Image (tube, helix red, strand yellow):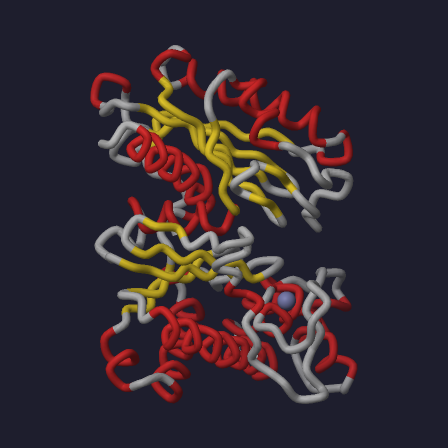
Amino acid sequence: MAELRKFVARHAAQEPFFVGVDLGGTNVKAGVVDDLGRPMSWLTLPTNSSAGPEDAVRRMGLAVKQATIDAGLQAAHIARVGLGSPGTMDIPTGMLLEPPNLVGWENFPIRARLEVHCGHEVTLANDANAAAYGEYWVGSGQKLTSMVLFTLGTGVGGGIIIGDLSVDGHHSTGSECGHIIIDISPQARLCPCGQPGHLEAYCSATAVLKRTEEALAQGRPTSLRRRLADGSALTTVLLAEEAEAGDPLADEIIVETAHYFGVGVTSLMHVIDPEGVVIGGAMTFGGNDTPLGRKFLAEVRAEVRRRAFPVLAAQTSIEYARLGGDAGFIGAAGLARLEHRRRHRM
Ligand SMILES: [Zn+2]
């Protein structure tokens, strides 16, 4: 997957301009985006979350200013800033509540503090919803009128966009697609959120590795054992390598993941009936660029065909995301642009 498109130059860019900030547990990415969703600059910095939220928003404010300079702009050229953050949060008041990936950041007024440090008004969004809006605006969902994004990574994230509306929900927990229930049996796996049977407990990279470890503990024959004995760490990349090399167990675990995931995709399709479903995140097995990535997608589609209303299965597109790690900051800028347009009745 192409991680980055070329920057659009200042003279070719279209006003107004926005800055998107994608706050992650490890890194922050900030960049300027023009009115057509084209990046003009971006930079990354460590989140260094243990130093606390005030230190991080101070540095994020500096990053907004640096990205502005890097784009050949001045502060007055920036119409608004968008911030995509991990939850939990309360979007109307701009508060972080209890973000599990940012320990010590509880009940922090992140929007107001970033406004102070960057000198612009800020639109706060859930990080996965921001990424979904990025894909919808200028990525894999560009031609769609409604879209569900799933991100498969350490966890399973989700975003739902319907006609320029990000479904944030009444309590800012809308679009939590990773926590739909796919297993109500007593043996259901426990999700990191504390509830059993959620999609994330089966399809996140963490869950895939747990299932792999269980298979290893059962003594299943696999070439993974030799790789681990040689000192390799058990990762989904290693799992993918062995599946591509023909290891039946690695292949079985990945195909099984596609089937679990297809169950979740089907549920969302029946609720939303989106024009398309987009799959992003770090665990997409190379996407369209590798045989394994194409096989994973084919298996997801096959599971959807087995379970969805025929008209949905036949007509809903299911594709990989296109923006890679840029979706978050581009989408955050896009949500800032939407708020700017609403306020100015554009
Ligand atoms: Zn959950």
